[in-house]
Length: 176
Image (cartoon, rainbow, N blue to C red; front, top):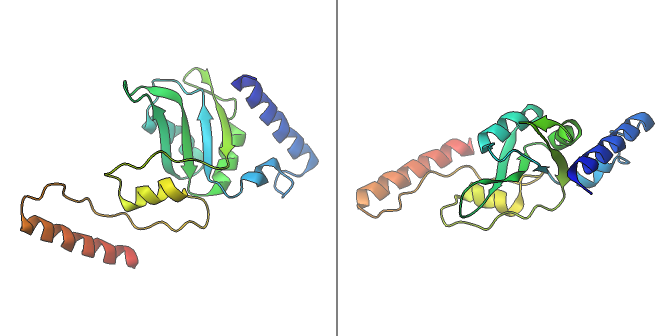
């Protein structure tokens, strides 16, 4: 089944729920995904950047994480992405309103993701990024405050002292 057919079927399912009055209840098909704030977006134009995707999809809620998959060798987009919203209710709005929509001349498919498997960890990821990749951003996940950038070179002890003072200052600010 191609992506346009899947989008059409999801839209028909949403129309049936609206007609029956079960759209905002536990009987809705969206209820299965209540613990995940992630959505899948397929059929994106290959020229779209992360910024373009954020601009379009942020109209339904605050985006806290975006994974636009790219080819490792060329760096070109593969045409699909995973988006995490701050609030799970935004995923319902995005799925219902963007599924089958045309963006940059291409019909896109948008669907919920129940168990998102984050990409492998990189050495230079800070605590916030590691937590997002590990636990996601679903309701109830406690995220650490963003950490200060660390210096990778060990050029002087003074620079390290400045960095540790900055980290202490920033952590006090986030604890308020």
